[in-house]
Image (cartoon, rainbow, N blue to C red; front, side, top):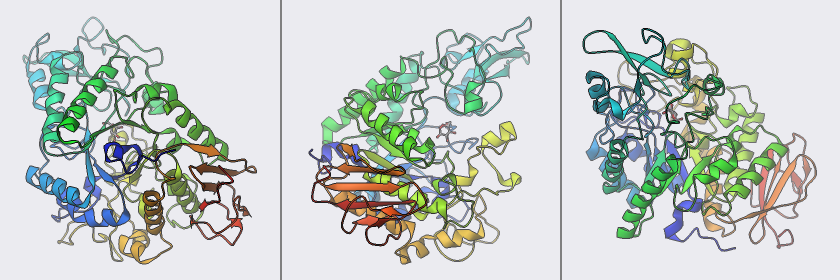
Length: 548
Ligand code: GLC
């Protein structure tokens, strides 16, 4: 097996990308909200951690109904996050440090404040302006029923009714998320042409690629027929309505975007990356998005949704590798992001301590992920072992899921609390302590235990585990791109070899077990006596090759 890690043309195949949730990373202006200058100030920290690139969550002008996933202008920076000049400084600083920069692009929907949507609202039914979105007459004698029975992902109907210019109740428009996020009509050629300009705008400013929001969206089934199970999306919060998602036409868009990226690569040799947020029912469907002329990568979310169970992990890893083989892509692993409960909490720990079973399992999962073939994404705070903040009071919650459903189940504020950098009390260095200015979400007192200054000073911290794992990953040819071979192991243990003699084993049980490999491990996720793999622990070894 030949590692392609050092081949700059294919840097993305096994890159480790750090997701920066800009509003919660670091605030340079003292308004309680993180910003691009804060990201630039944090680059040396990320360099020290050892990541290959960053993905910036949306920073475009937006009314922030869904924290920037409601874009009012795709080619600018919201003043709360900085301006284009600051963006250019960030890209230049990242380039100097060898950190690639990915933007988050949101092509399925925009903001109801986007000029095109405002124009559509002001224009009459049947106009060219309305044809850029999905406007339709309502059902029933007075048009007071939505055009079809679809429900939005975040609760409620997927349609809202507008008032026409003459004040009469009018047509309806489609929004698969909130009413403030109208869906673009990708069957109208003006829409792909517009996004072509958006891509080029940012590529011309030097970005290395894009994370594509809702990449299985964009097209809806022609005619927008009723769904047999209209509440399926809202119920599962997965995009499962077969009429609203994963339509075959979307693949042509990704072919075109790939061609645009290749065009830029042909100019300067720098390979640009398209990584899709692709939520589709099967690994097989998923693989269709990463065929050689489509997206380079698509997040493989099955690992993230797997329970802490050896068989579940083995199954999703095997399926991912099998289904991705032959596509030209590599599996894109992810354990945390801005939409999910953080691993430390998800794997079973009652927050807030951050030092028990959930933390041990999250550490083990990190070593496992970094040993798997392919690329990996780390969500900010994951490297600090941050647990979810589960007890935010209702009145500070901002997630539209809470606003629309009134339910705290699966709200996302708890993984978006601003990072702790230093000190013993909020704002923990996240923001300047200007009088009265607080971080946009309250940080609990126990964030002190996870602050980066403490993490860097303590060699047993999550931070050191991630840093050591990343360093080894970049120096060992066995890790990164390539294949794996499962090893026979007793129940509860998962072990595989990579290339020439690297073995990774994880003990999913809580009791210690004899180490599956003799000799001293290179790295362990927790303390292990000689010859033992402790419970809820992962380890890496270099062997004499007998395991290959
Ligand atoms: C994606 C984003 C999520 C956002 C949604 C709508 O799933 O990750 O945060 O709310 O798209 O844009």
